Amino acid sequence: MMLRIAALLLCSMAALAAPRETLDIYFIDVEGGQATLIVTPAGESMLVDAGWPGFEGRDSDRIVRTARKAGLKQIDYMLVTHYHLDHVGGVPELAAKFPLVTFIDHGDNTEANPSTEKLAAAYYPVRAKGKHLVVRPGDKIPLRGADVTVVCARGQVIDKALPGAGRPNPLCEAAERKKDDPTENARSVGFLLKFGKFRFANLGDITWNTELGLACPVNKLGMVDVYLTTHHGLDASGPPQLIHALAPRVAIMNNGAKKGGSPAAWKILHDSPRLKGFWQLHYTLAAGPEHNTAETYIANMTAEGCGYGLHLAARKDGSFTITNERTGYQETY
Image (cartoon, rainbow, N blue to C red):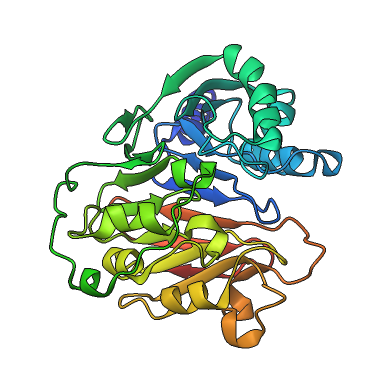
C-alpha cells in the first residue's frame, strides 16, 4: 500500500512539473490600447504595453487577472512600444499591483507634447525601480524560450532582411508615402517572434512610412503566421505593401468599439493573399457589418466592453489554436 501511495505521489509531482508545450499569447482587452502578454514554454513572460490608466484600474486589473491565469508570479519583461496614453499610461498602475522585472523601450520620449511628456515623467521613476533595456533595430530581446528580434524602434528599421526574407516586393512600384509622422507612433518598438516554425509580428503603432521601410524595395520580414494589426487597424498604418508581403495566415485586431478598425485598413487586411482567419477584440461600431469579421471571431460585441480577450497557443510545428474567451470557441490553424 505504501509503495502504491508513493508511486501515485510521484506521478502527481511529475504532472505538476510537466513543462509547457505551447507558447501562449494573450491579447488582453484594454479598450483600443495594447496589452499583449507572451508566455514561453520556459516560463518566461513579456507584456507588450499596459493599456490605459484610470477607469478605476480596469486595464491593470485585467492584465493581473490574465497573468495569474497564466500561472505567473511576475512579468519578466515589460516592453513599452511608445509613449502614448493607451500604451505606457497603464504601466505605473500595473507596477503597483504586480511585479515587473525588466523594462524595455526605445529610450526616452521623443515627442514634444505636454501630454506625452507627462506620461513619460510618470513612467521613468517606475522604470528606475527595475532593470532597463534600451533596444534598437536588429537587437534580440532575451526572452527565454523564443527568438524575438526588434525590427523597428525610434523611427528606424532593420538595415538587412531577416534570415529567409529579402525578396523584392513587386507592390512597391505602386507605393505612395503619406505625410511624415512626427509623433511617438512612428517611433514604436516592433518585433518579430519565432517559436519553432511559428512566426508572429507585433509592430506597435508604427505608421505608414515607417512600415514601407520594412516592406520596400524588399520584404525585410518575410511571411508570418499571425499579425497583430499596427495602430489598432487605423488607416494611418497598414499599407498593402507590408500587409500583403507579410501574408499572415491569421490577423488579430486590437481595436476598441470606437477606436481603430478603419474600413480602408480592414479591407487591405481582409484581402491579404494567405488570410485564413480574422479576429477582433471588439466589434467596430462605426464600420458596420460589412467591415467587421464574423461574430464568432470577435471577443467583445458591445460598446461597454466586458473585458473578454483572445488566447493563442502556438506549437513548434507552426500550428496554433485561438480561443475566444467570450464564447469558448476555438479554431486551429
